[in-house]
Length: 306
Length: 227
Image (cartoon, rainbow over all chains, first blue to last red; front, side, top):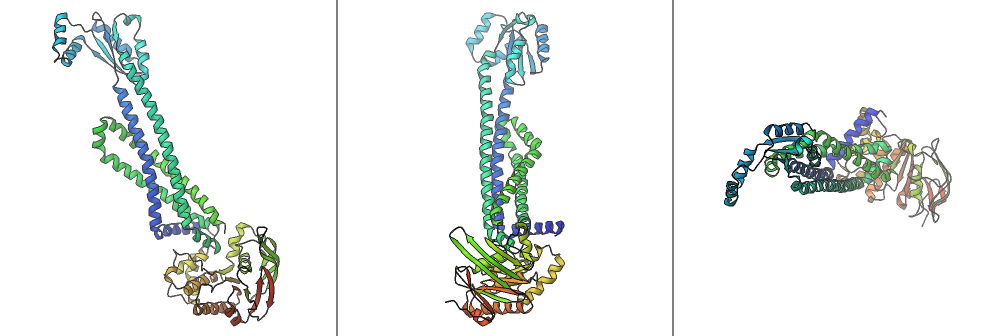
């Protein structure tokens, strides 16, 4: 038999099967989609959790307060020195006057504090640098780096001690979220495998008599198998395409909601799915197709022994 | 045409469906294989189209020794033997036309030839006006005629009919037997497996009787002799 003729007949029988078993096809496709919805929901939650954690990490800053006698030039030189490190994301200079103004603004309603300032008579604040790093792990390195003979004697205080506990907690939370996300994804992937496996087996079981009859009238194994394999591949493709459309619509219509809850992070969540969309689509389609093809071939084996 | 030499079929150590069966069927014969339930007649039919494999002995169909046929060769054998089943074995989601055409499609026949042959065969069995119906829309007799049409499209030299009238009323059963006789008159060897006394007696053709897996009689122009 010519390969072309076989392929054309397999394609024809595939579409006949799908249309003439409409409800079975519909249910199979729906289950495939629901499985992908579950996997994508876990993925979405993981991405959002990561983005939120990173956003919190970005907001952690350490302030280095200098002695009042440290000149603006010296502090700006320290600023330049710190900016030279790759780990440093930004270093803001805060002048003594700015620090005083900011303090007054924050404690404007507290008369005792204001009275104390009046009692001192002069600006008790020195110049300061506000340092943010790419990762919270880098703070310790940066704060050690500033302890050079040139600057050490002018440093009055580093408020890292206050942040240390917060940073440790964020680090710990971050790794736990990553671990939990991975475990959850693995669990749902396992459930998805079982669901797909069972769905295909049920679909093939429904066709068991048909498979036997095809064999009895002289069909070889591949002629019987091909339409079922193509059907499984088409369900996988259909489910992956519909899931991608649903994900696009979800991200599009949930923009306001995401902005409301996550602020700037929402842009990163969207960007993640835009950047990784093709990879996610191909991976989901590929895994689903391989899984459903293997399951179909396995489920058909016993009914082909006629 | 068909030769069985000392054929046995065992299902495990305690179940012996056929025991030392030897018989020879010539080209163009119409042979009825009769026997009560459990006598081994359906097993014998299944051996002929390799749905079952013999435990011992030799089976030759045409010039082909199918006793040790390879799995990959079974489809080729089945395309050369027409088989009709008691439960019709039609593809329920294919139309009458598609069921018959399917037997040619699996053999790789070109579409044009299929379009030529199928209507002819459906005309022979009297279903040319019901080609687009699904099996569930047909009576039992009509479904069996589709099954016969499907078995004929290859123009097989042998037709094995396993209890083809088992699910039919007397009138439809008579129609099917007349059809099988007509096919036999065109030169096809027909092996009819049945336990219907009236049909066998009306045929007045060769009758092979089985009991407990053994051939107990083989009579030309015979009758149903088992009680």
